Length: 448
Image (cartoon, rainbow, N blue to C red; front, side, top):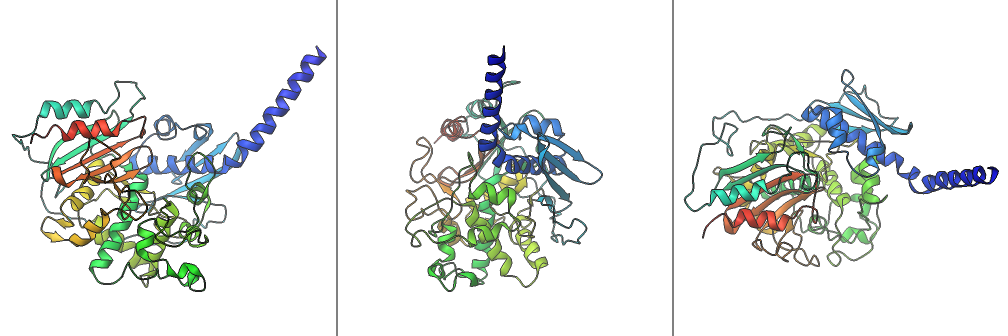
């Protein structure tokens, strides 16, 4: 009996040691992810805590967190077995922000001054219900089958699609939502937000206020080799700066999103590993650095806040969109854009129409072409903060497709040759969700 107890004690010690070496260092990130997710989902989209825990937070290790929502105080807290408690606060107009113990919640803050379009146009150019439009060259039964196939049957968790919206020739031809979601549900786009960030630079370029081919305006780099990195290099993820992005472990990206006060500075402080334009490396840190660079283009914080919305988001009637900030007040341009599936489709439509929105040229055509041109060394899979199908990632989908892409399978696909925008929001990505088959089915519903 003593031997058995001794053996059990040894096993317990080994388990504790294993937990200490493998999981404990992750607790801060686990509770940070969970608190931020709970606060955003609850306060931005009115989701109950239990639904967020069963869906958004149904991720290995994240599901270890214990979560609490304080509706009166507008915040959420999370911990893991009582350890490493983190807090995310909600501010109307700014969304949720993960904070540390030093953050002064009583400090006044600025809100973006938004312009909400009040015209009575139908969706997608307005927010009234779309007009019924029937195209003779669309096989609607095939289209419906392709979309239905993207969703799980009741209770399933294989595909986990939440929303699909399809636009063809500037008209809504199909949409579907999972149980609990509607056309008014705000859904996190994750890295699709990178494409929003790129569009802000597109507007500045159109206004002649910035030259992307000149060295990035970062004074901290002027005394070393990083002074040669251009905005073009940053937009292309081709700066040569050190960065690790691996969401299966503790890495630069996870530490930035769930620990950093100023997310833009994380990439700014990284050394150069390669010469610019010689080594493509996907980096959320680079996009947040771009957001910080944008911030420095304006004399005041208010101008910076306003620009993101006035330049693009509100211009095209994405009234549901909120881009959340880090603790320093910089937009998390890499990851934290929330909007309805319909509003995400509006963004795709802007690019489908070469930067023109219902007669107004918001982005130059040349910017859209630049966006969809393959980055050097990316093997045809990346442009300027947009992904591309030029390299044939999706073999049964037109090669001219370019798209916004986010964690867990968020997508805004723009297919110029088919005059089509396809939005899919969900919780599964390739290979669990077959995007090639999904896109192929929708594209093939349009007869030649």
